Image (cartoon, rainbow, N blue to C red; front, side):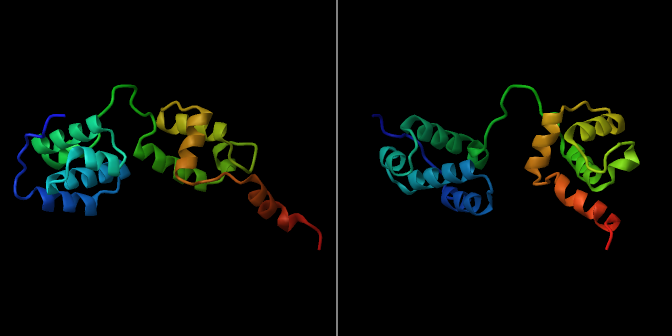
Length: 160
């Protein structure tokens, strides 16, 4: 194996320490951790064995950090279709879930993912499928609980 012929600036270690403290992404944290060990002077092979990186991946992250700084440790954008569910659309969905479906012309007192998708399409013009709505609700930890709402709606109708 060839030796690493990179020279890091004097502020490389404090910069990596700052990245380690501020990042919330696990992959970026692991990369910064590994690169910091290399900057300290530990051999690439030792670091890759210790932190379970492949040698080539670690070498790539070290080179990116040397040439691009902390930005080199971040994930690059990937090709593909951009996500349909934007942050604004998620916020709209959250507000919609809190509202009563009967006010939006539903025949049921409980939202379904299909009805949410239909109302979202009417209000925002963005066509989403039932599964996209379900995934967005799951990501935001909102659960549509038919049983709980059913019990609260009909609790007052029972005879004492």
